[in-house]
Image 1 (tube, one colour):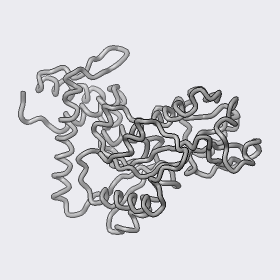
Image 2 (cartoon, helix red, strand yellow):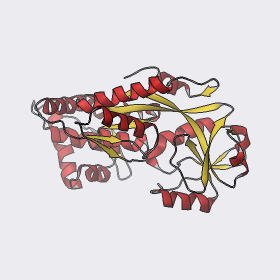
Image 3 (cartoon, helix red, strand yellow):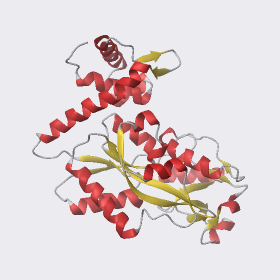
Image 4 (cartoon, helix red, strand yellow):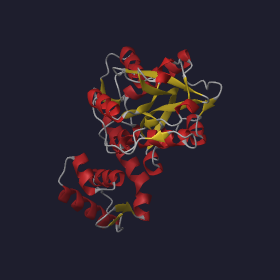
Length: 321
């Protein structure tokens, strides 16, 4: 085996491992698919191992591919840390906040106030699942969301800091009978159809949380639908289909609709600050301090009485990793 593996080959490997699709991985890296395939074949030759099983219908990691994952991440993390250590001016930190409201956006604003000399560049991606793949590919630094809902292979390359338990809510048309209530009992939604993001692969962790909450309650979920981009399109689709929307209380204002907290039980959406293991950047520490300060001041990590949360989420939020 070569002792001088090029970092480019490891980046190619991690992109394919994240996407399990050569065309998408090539697009993520801005390279031609043929060039990406050549890099993977070269890496396999240098390691003397087959890393992927390729068929006409799917790509999956071999046992050796799974074994390489943590090593590849550590090598690239170390390379990034080395480059950062010898850079006089920290590069901009790319931070996904999802929307220009809510928990992540407030943490970002606090970090900017605390460190005006650093550059935090906001991104507005849809869902932690999609953002985590961007982080793994090196195209994003930080995001926020439900870490327990991320695929285990992808999660192994991520670190997180618990930030908040957001209260889950329902988004209703302002003429809906339940819109007059201050909070909506879950049982009152029996027979309703809720949009939970099904069909949008980037928000799979949210759709999974919704399925766990709604199971056995007689509440229908909307059939899978392609990602809805933009507020105007979101409003159009939701109104056309007559859907209510499972959301959190930290939701973007939608014209003609109202957000109502859910109760009986009080369902919670866990939010963590998430980044790539080994990331070295002064802005990361500032974000972490800003999140911890807001959480302490506003009780973001206090579990309310009757709070509902899956066991794996409780375990993930009980520790920093």
